[in-house]
Length: 109
Image (tube, rainbow, N blue to C red; front, side, top):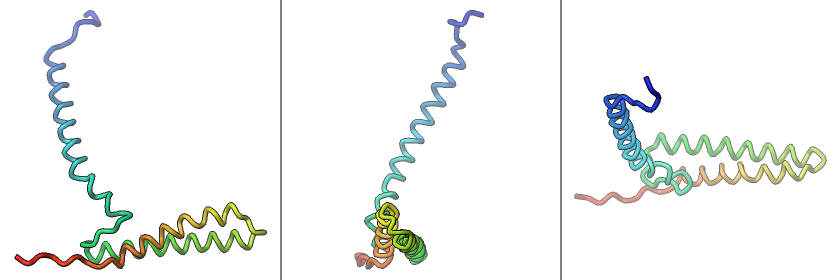
């Protein structure tokens, strides 16, 4: 069999499969694209369990940043560690703030 010869039935099946996959991927990306937006903005209609999770994760980040800050200041004022400790601390505070955002009033029907 020559390498240039291809099986048309296999090619059609591959094209159909790739088309189905691309359609599924596009629809999934469109549905999931808005789920990333509330990470730093904070979803005002988040359920209670999501708020508790955001608070716990934010507290972990804030404590981690505070711990790095403490280590950086005690270890001969290692300013690189102090500067890098600011990022997780601020991310933690942002997540804690988002955990306590007020819910929007839902319109009554």
